Length: 328
Image 1: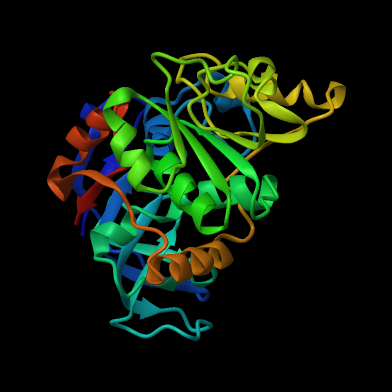
Image 2: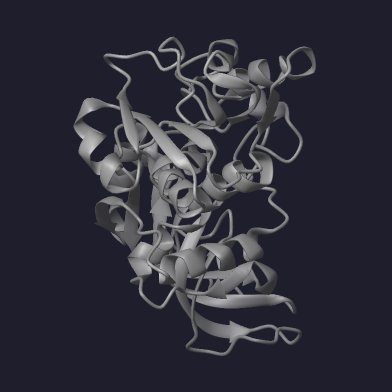
């Protein structure tokens, strides 16, 4: 099969199309014929090996070289074969998953426990845009944020992959959503269900006097201490991301916010979507919301499989609106 293989940390030029053996599913795995995948910052971090501090963290990047050689955390496709212990899936079934690796290939093995049927009303490309980004948004809002209907939620970084899902999910769950994004994306974010949109180039949401029950900080454009000013006394701050950097960021931004937790009245937490124990259950919840018409993936650009390096390069520029998807 064809795969985009990463042998060493580096740039998109180090992502090389290679012919390798088709994988064989283990007893509890499903072999998926990949029809589409998507690009996200997670792939960029593993390609660059940055931030360097992550190379020293257990279960994260490899110290001297990448642990993951076939990137692509999300995939959508058709079941090709199943392991002997797998039930509930048959060849030909249309599925999608957050696999954390393997999507940049024609075939991938996925644990059956991570796999769910593809939403009936989505194409493969649309479905591939969902898993990691939408799961991050759902975890931040519900698992960490404990969102309740009627609460006021602010989404900082509302026009990106996670943000476009967060606005829609929060609205679907009955929240009053304020979104922070750039001027060119204000109309889009309003169309996703935001009650109010703040243009970060003209207004500082931490100093406008508004208070929120829950703040999802995806962009990391303000410090955790500054974001506290935008919270109610018992509000919750969820650290999701931040500006990329070579040595510490975005990990430094997240850890600095968490360090405030023991000393303040608000709750300060982070979201770890990679090690999420309920990925499958969350995808089933997202599927229901999608099929009910509450969520629609926002897709910025699509690329063919051979142009994955160009797609990653575009993701690196930091101006993607919604998701970048790949047709395999």
